[in-house]
Every structure is written in C-alpha cells, then in structure tokens.
Image (cartoon, rainbow, N blue to C red; front, top):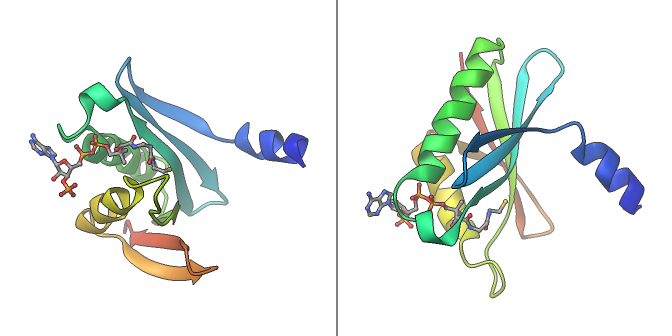
Length: 113
Ligand SMILES: CC(C)(COP(=O)(O)OP(=O)(O)OC[C@H]1O[C@@H](n2cnc3c(N)ncnc32)[C@H](O)[C@@H]1OP(=O)(O)O)[C@@H](O)C(=O)NCCC(=O)NCCS
C-alpha cells in the first residue's frame, strides 16, 4: 500500500515559494486541476502565502486549459487545527463544497471558465 501511495504522489508536481511554502498539483485528464498538500512554514504563516500559492496554482491551471479546480481537505481535528483555515482560504477563493466523505473529508471545487 505504501508503494501505491508513493506512486500516486509521484504524479504530483510542486509549485514553491522557495524556503517558505509549497502546494502540490496534478492535471487530471484535459479539464481538472487537482490541488493537494499545501504547506507554509510556521514562521511565514498568516502573511497571505497560502492565498498566494493558490493564486499561482490557479493561474497555472488556466494556462494549461483546465476548466475546473478541485482539492480534498481533511477537516480539522486536534492534531490538524489549521485545516479549517485552509477550507476558509479555498472558499474565499471561490471554491464550493462538492462532496463530503466519511464526515471529515471534503472535496472542494471551483469553475475556472
Ligand atoms: C494551512 C496553511 C497552509 C495556511 O497558510 P498561511 O500562509 O498561514 O495562510 P494565509 O496567510 O494565506 O491565511 C491564513 C490566515 O491569515 C490571514 N492573513 C493573511 N494575510 C494576513 C496579513 N497580512 N496579516 C494578518 N493576517 C493575514 C488570513 O486572512 C487567514 O485568516 P483566517 O485564519 O482568519 O482565515 C498553514 O497553516 C499550514 O501549512 N499548516 C500546516 C499544514 C496543513 O495543515 N496543510 C493543510 C492540509 S493539506
């Protein structure tokens, strides 16, 4: 199972603000920009970098002709309190909740056309 996980992860590419943070992205098929694993180093948080990373990823998706963007976020719990912030960041950027799995995983979607 671990091998499968890493094989899937190798399909992702990284968009980085050097030394500060990154977001992983993958183009599924002709139309979908899928985003995952946003990370900003603690000392650079709350300066708008997550929002900036998303904007750069969206611009890239549009350049590649993607018609919509998706991302999956596991909702916050005690071990991952920042996840709710991430959902907020995506929703402020125009995403809506498309599906909910297992009561704690949301698929967010945004039309890019
Ligand atoms: C979630 C995460 C990526 C957010 O990164 P970030 O760079 O701090 O996010 P932003 O700065 O764009 O936005 C965070 C907050 O700062 C606020 N903010 C943005 N610019 C600001 C500024 N100049 N001054 C003050 N606050 C600001 C935003 O309004 C937002 O407020 P909110 O929490 O009330 O929504 C980061 O906390 C992280 O890497 N966490 C650990 C990894 C993780 O949980 N990843 C998600 C799972 S895949």
